[in-house]
Length: 580
Figure 1 (cartoon, rainbow, N blue to C red):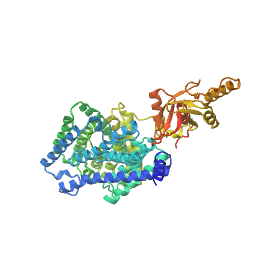
Figure 2: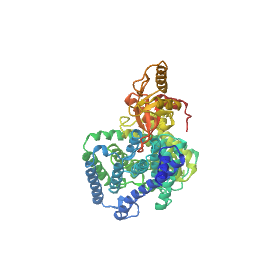
Figure 3: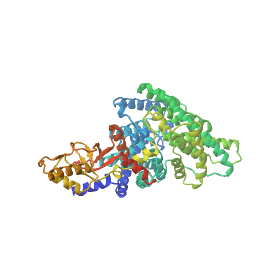
Figure 4: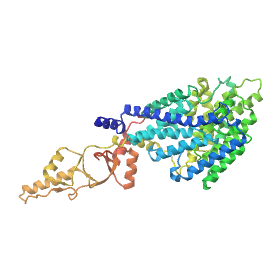
């Protein structure tokens, strides 16, 4: 039974078997969705007791004193928690996930996951102007990563499993499984390939199933029936895209501006954010919390223009401040809030300018949400798919594509700005998106390029043992204790020389052949785990200035399973068919 279990774990972790990866992704998707469900319930249960109405984040009905007490109390608790934690252990959110995917092959520490869960619950319950989707992405990716680590998953597959956790988290948060898949591949994995699609789709479906079983089939927003009434609205849709791009650029620039506060103590930059939120909430209490109740009102056209403008500006400042100083909650929700306010504002303006023309305010609010999400996060396809799933209306695809593309172009080409996640990570100092070659190498198992035609040999060999090894016709001889490889031709030459000496009547040499002493073109090697990918192998070669590595399993046998060279990797890259 134990042997069967080991074989099954080996099939999942140290192979490229797609069925094993798909089943593990399904398990990771279910586990991630359950964690997200507990996260949402931990927020909604206190709201059900605290707030006097059914809406989960309707802080408007609380007294001013209660709102301020919640904000300041939550801020003090968060500051106290983070002061007890070492700075290197404070990483949370989408940026933490991206950093671990780029630098640590998807290994997400358990302690950071726990910290994210606790900190985000406190931040949202206390009414800070943040979202739950960023923390959910960290929790989903972290849960899936922990499952992958527990079975010893190879690095290239651990990245996929972590991406599957992201898809499940998005699906469980919004009940939008397609958007979960696209977001995971567009923002986190930064690529589309067949090998990754299948497990990520399964995980996203699992997230949607758990979310629907617990919270029902409705999506995160109450989207009314929306549609474009006429092609005459195209110029106005273009204008929405342009203005949305400008607002998205303003948000990213504000994040950069507020990053100057990171030189201040934690209590001052977070305490200042809480105080600013408390002051703004005196006039605009809707700015507190996730704000989905206000988004739904904007979609229904129930929020007046002045309030929408005030909320748009307030949310821009507070969300950018929180994103810049590493406040432990998300910015995706505030981005959608800003987009809904902008779209609702423009929709009401059009009705004011052209009262005789029927315009759906909810239509423009929904387009604004998609435009801001696509432009700020640099996730245009994920935004478009989310728009389609939220509206359940294929007629919105064409205007949605137009708005998202225009807004994204304004951010990237007019203002030359990266995604907000890159800005949070220091504009390339702490995080760099991999180029296509690095991406391919990270997604390729080291076993796909290694050579197995070798024989492990002792340094000292008798002539009989040498002859037996040469009969196997290996390409290389590996001296494991010396971390050296040499060509078998050197051993054959030494053995032949000894036979010639014996034939000439020379005294027989009873000593064994010393593979270190004989003339040979020896190459130094370092050990690398079979879990590694080709980028790991190249990095290790560069670190030790080597051309060869010996690949070992991580089990107790410490058995070498192959050798790999820089030439093998280069040959694999040049001759490997693309789009696997």
